[in-house]
Length: 165
Image 1: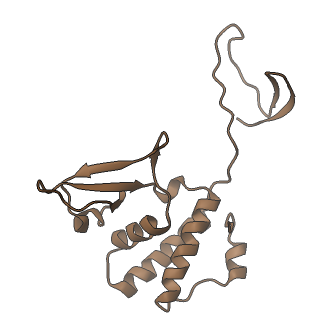
Image 2: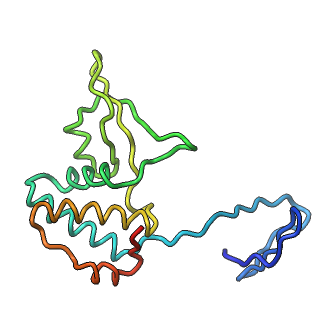
Image 3: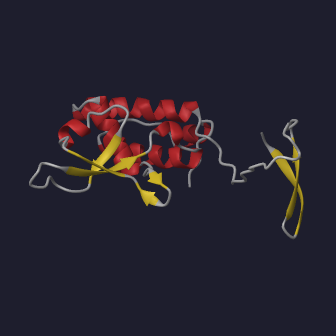
């Protein structure tokens, strides 16, 4: 539900809801207020995947490896609270980069027990439009370095939800 802040006085905020909100007036209520961020568009996400596929063909690597490389270079770190998420595992980097649903970058070499530490990155389905724009900008740089044609700046601006930061 979204609403509009109608007034602020001391520690009181009046909110006008766009739709009815039903709750027991005598019950405790939790309300969260956070800054609104535009979600990334499906067009922007699709374009990232198209570029990723073209790049992986040029580099002769798997789609998962290419996507993980791009997310690790230009994507968003996963946080748990204020702490960047890391995992400790015995999975080698060559196998980890082939994971489809887990995006990780090694941050240490294997210790004597063959254990690796990885930084975890968020999946693109969680990105807002600004975060997606950063990922696409970086992917375009990588594609252009390989001679892969990308959209013109005008075409990119027309891509719904695409914002340059």
